[in-house]
Length: 624
Image (cartoon, rainbow, N blue to C red; front, side, top):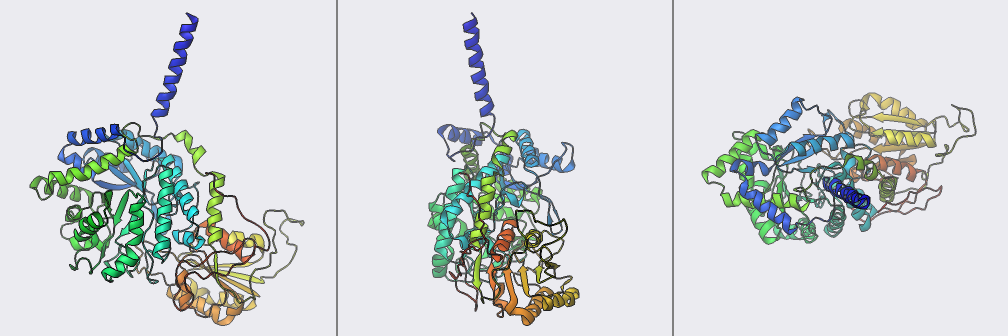
């Protein structure tokens, strides 16, 4: 009897373990099994028109702790219960220029709760263009996409996708709105810039395909954007209508090849941009999002894409200005053009009601609606969400922020640093501190008095943000009494006398310029603002030969400052890029990057002066 009882107890333990394992999502290869196909089709036939319409919308969900009775949480529940929304785009709250990043545990708890409160499993997406660290703290920090172009290693883009997928899935995010397949062929582009891998269609396509491969290995859905190409524009489509004024031959040779490579690599979705392309659709009011020519004909028929077609955010001015008198029609026209998923409508209730009315009236056929809803349900089944919706919060500490992955993110930033000009008089800087070891002196003293021999001027959009903080800390570790000055457009003019006095007195000047694309920024431009640009020009007029300028983001800024004699690019303002820049300045890492873009009247794509490490440094690669 004891043997029988012991056997039965063992069976119960095994069953409990299997049940416990099955109650959580298990990221793996994305594949719709026959059982998943059956679930999707069976579920589709059970849904009402209203429930089907809800499935084709995705709205914001801002990750933070929310009490179950918090009005913000109640709005999310209403979206699921009243409007049957089937997907959420996770982001975080903002406060002016500050992105209020949340913690992985807070995000996972909220997403688990929403999954439990929803009738059908939810899809969660996010904009993790630089990895999960864009929204959540404690995760692996990666530089901008263009840094991967400067690094130039395909395997690094693949690891980027894999690590981002592992961390995203750990907190409950299934779908990343990345990689960016735009070819940044227009140096004046204010919104793509460093979000693109570069200006060469082949390199962009190769890195896009590698990212998709890695992301799929980690079990994450991918999106290429912004179809049919947002790289050759000079307008931010968040603020107005951007136009791609090129002929079809140009589209076929520059804009479209990376999208073709992405489709061949099995990308799960394509995001359509709010841009006009007169060569494809001559109607000036037909941005791609609402153009059947660009969605149904070009993307689906000519390029053969069979996955989910998703709009760019429907609340962007590039689209909303066309529907100011009837905002709900934007969703209807986008759906009629061939989009399957309607992202972030400006007025969700109005858009939902307009879609229901269009289906009820026959303007949108039931068959057309069913086709998109079935795609979405099958996508949920491909992730196994019909069997397990929630993530294991206890597993986050084992997956997120692995030291090897953190080191890999730093290594990519290090390898991306590109030296474009070097007059041989400034670099490398002399190391006066000793990073990583204790000084043989009393506290608060230095072994060598430098008397502000080196001045670092850090130019940013807003001195209240984090831009330059990591740079300043790392710089002072190496030169403890270096003079570090933070300036932005509001204070640059008033501080010019102080800055120029410091420049005159210094033996070496470092100017780190933080300019990166910011979505929806009024007066958006990748050029330096007037006051900071004037100040940088004054610095160069006085001290170009003893100054090194570092582009902490936009590499094209050198085109406006031809007097620059020493020029270095990181293609990113991420903390890892700040650290990489300082290490490169002091000769602690090998400088090996090459420009993935051309800088007008300054340097051609591929330029990069290689320099050996003179002090030592480096990092370990990612844990696979």
